[in-house]
Length: 185
Image: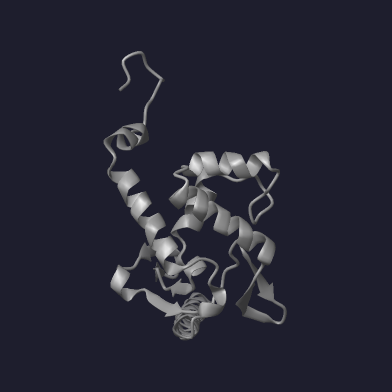
């Protein structure tokens, strides 16, 4: 009975590996076609078609406002999230805006009409460990139907973010501080 159990376990493991390979292949084919598996703020899923999005005009206006506040008016992600929360707006999940949710919108190139897939891959199917891929391995496909803002505005937002990251005062704020002990930090 132990031999039979071992053989059945080996067969199940091999089937798991084969299934993983088929799923990876399917995801890669969809990435090459520029299909979007996730739902993003500013878009709605097309009924009956899991991989295609349409622009949600109401949310798209908020996305445009976020980019305008960040690039043209010089507001930071914290201030933008406060502005949106004060107006009673919620993020995609129906929760108040956070610095992270605003930052993700500013960094996501889909708003400029570019779908990027295959950023991470599962290295081990049993532990489900993921590993970030090199930027050269990402699959980027232009899809003008998804464009909410011009590419130039998205690039300006990336430059603002880069400049903020190089600012010594902001770097100092990011250092983790501990008030647990009297002489911490």
